[in-house]
Amino acid sequence: MPLQVRLLMNAVAGGLLLAALAYDWLGNLAHELIGTAMFALLIFHNTFNRRWYGSTARKGGRNLRGWLNIVTIGALAATVLSLLVTSLIISRSFGARQLHAQAAYWTLVIVAVHIGMRWAMIMASMRAWLRLRAPSVGRTWILRALALAVAAYGVHSWMVMGTGSRLMAEMTLNLWNFEEAALRFFLHQGAIVALFVCLGHYATSLMQLRRKGSR
Image 1 (tube, helix red, strand yellow):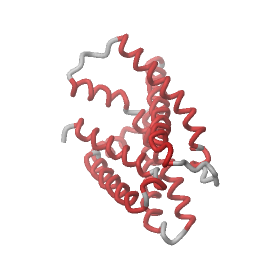
Image 2 (spheres, helix red, strand yellow):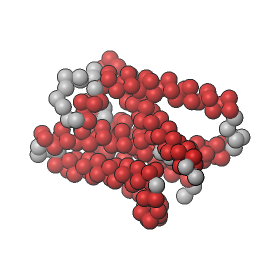
Image 3 (cartoon, one colour):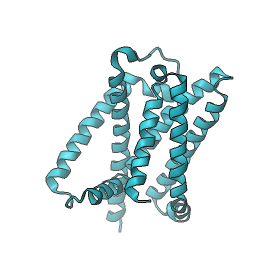
């Protein structure tokens, strides 16, 4: 299967994760259907990447970036497994509902970092697919400025949505009114994702520069 198709499937899975956060708006049935579709896409994703996992296990720990990659994948696997387990027992325990929500927000953050660490590869693939020229200096700086603006809005969204409290499973009265601002909910969550994509991408870039400088 072409890489671009797999990237599209991954993008759909990420979109479903964002949609699933709007449980109070969608209702239980839609939430369960979205979650089922997301897990199906994750199964496809891991099936197509099984050889890559083997390569990472053999070579991943050779440098700081490799170790960070392993830790990120391990954390992502743990949060997704927590999502799956709590989804099966959520009707029997209120505590499971809290853990399910906490796992969902951790998954969102870790997925964003995971994407950021692969952003250069994703952009290269998209340029080849769209048959664009090699990146120009002007276009690069425009995209960097746009990314910085979106990341800054992501910091604002982090505070508006109380994401830190949700990651810690703290009780919060920050309930979103979907009847008035459903679109704004997704814009805020998307900005938070963009923030961590930027953090993952630039952290990886700095590690690469440091590695080249040490040679």
